[in-house]
Length: 162
Image (cartoon, rainbow, N blue to C red; front, side):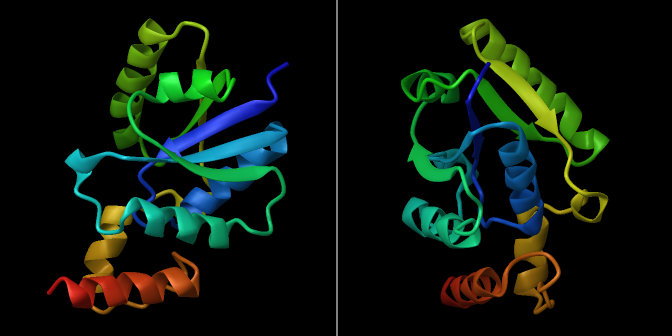
């Protein structure tokens, strides 16, 4: 039985949808490693350090959750952490094609590591960090999408980049 799962992503920033998936994974696995990817191709708004700190604060009350960051292939990171499962979230049908391709590629690279898809609560199924950044830049109230400290950090960061 697998005890450790990895939930990789960019988390730029973490949303209630991400937190919902972390809680769902934690109900299944003894340990969930939330792994923030170093992916400069995505041009993140927040630094790795900022995203890790936001996740630590957002998940501080969830037992069995470890926040970390990684560079390179997620399957190599999973092997290093002795994890046999990757958690991926599916919000809408539009996510499926990309996530399916990635899961099959990871399976080809590491047949011993499985990908499990989890769906967030319906009220978070349309959330994306990209959409939230756009809404924040237009002054929207994000309190139903992200914790208050993340909303403040997001709006502060967007003001700094103008």
